[in-house]
Image (cartoon, rainbow, N blue to C red; front, side):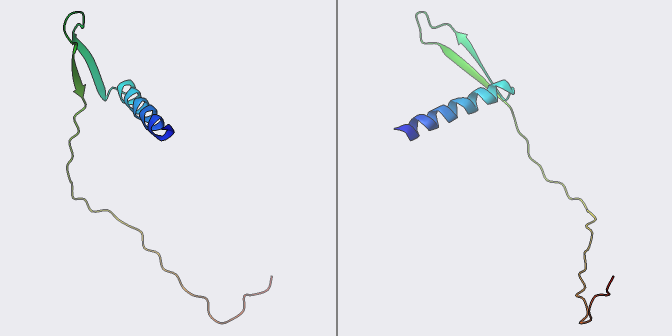
Length: 73
C-alpha cells in the first residue's frame, strides 16, 4: 500500500514539475456546473533528427617503463 501511495505521489510531483517548466499546459475549456468539465492539454512537441559530423578525437599512447630502476633524487 505504501508503494502505491509513493508511486502516486511521485507521479503527481512529475506532473507538477512538467507544468512548472511549461512542457504541459492544461486548460479547462468547459465549466463543470451542469456538465462534466472538459479539459484540453497542450504538450510540447519534440523533434528528433540525426546529423553526421567529423569530430577530432585525441589519441593516447601508453609506454611501459623499461626494466631499469628509476633515477634516485
